[in-house]
Image: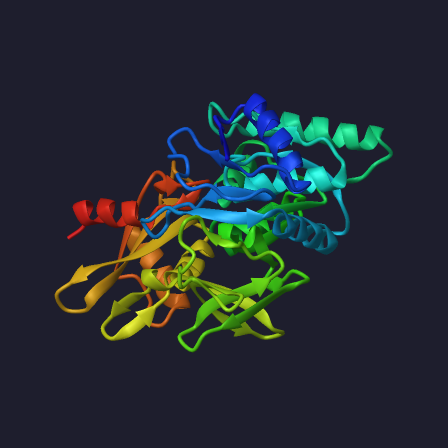
Length: 377
C-alpha cells in the first residue's frame, strides 16, 4: 500500500490527487498521513483509501474508506448543495474533510485551488486563492464555488478577511460545534454556511444543518448515542475486523444527540465528555451554545473538574470577543445563568487568549482540563 506523507504543500496535494484518481477507478490503495503520523502497518486491497482518525478518544486508528463510499459521499454532498462545482482546499489533505474536497473536485471534473498550509492557515492567502477560484469559474462559463473549513479558520477569516467567503455558493463548516453567534456573523458577512456533522468513519460530513444526506440514515440508541448508516460508511478499521463500533451495517459514534422539531438532529457532544454534577448529566455543547451566544464571548469550551461537593463542577474556558476589552468572569457567569438551568450553569469562568486545538481545529478538551486544573481551585 502506497503511503503519501502530506506536508501541507501543493506538491504533496498533487501527488495525493494522482493516487486518489487511480484508487477511485479501482486502482491500488493508498494512505495519506501527516508529518508526525505513523504509517499503517497492515495492508489492504485495491480501491480503498486508509485515513487516520483524529484520535479524540486517545487511541488513533486507521479507517478504511472504499472508493464507492467516497464517491457516494461526494455525490450526496453535491446533490444537497445544488450541483458539482469548483473547490478550494484549505484543510489538510490527509484528513477526511480535506480528502473529500479532492474527491468532489475529481468527480466534478474541476481543478481545485489548493492553499499552501506549510506555514499554517493564512487568511490573506485564502482570500487570494478564493479570488483565483471564482475568477477561473467565471472564465469557464460560471459554475458553483465551494470550500470546507473548521470554525477556528472561519473566525480568523471573519477577523481579517470578512469578504473572502461572499463569492462561495456554500461554505461547509465542520470538525467542531458551530457557535450560533459565529454562524450568524458569517451570514452577515455574506457567507452561506452549512454546518456539517460526520467523521472519518462516514467519509466526512454526512448530516448537513441537522438533516442527513440522501442515502444516509440516523438513529439514536436508548442512551442517546448517535448511530449512522448508509452508502458513505467505512469498511471498518484497518486490522480490527471485530471492532464493536461497526455492527450490522451501522456505526456507533460515541456522540450524544437528540431530535428537535421537524426531525432535525441536535448533536450534544461526546458521551464521555458529559459532566455529572450533583447527580445531573450536563452536555458541554449545550452550555457552550449558551456562552457562545453572549456578545462578549468569541468561543467557549466547557469541561468538568473534580469537586468534593458536586462530584464534578462545570467550568468554562472562554476566549473574549474583544481581547482588548475582556469581560469580567462574573459578568459571563451571570449571562450564562440567564440562559441555563442552575445545574447546567458554569461554577467558574476562566478567560484565555485562545483555546488549545488538535487535529484540524477541534478544541482539545483534554488540554483544557489540564490547563484549568493547574489554574483553578
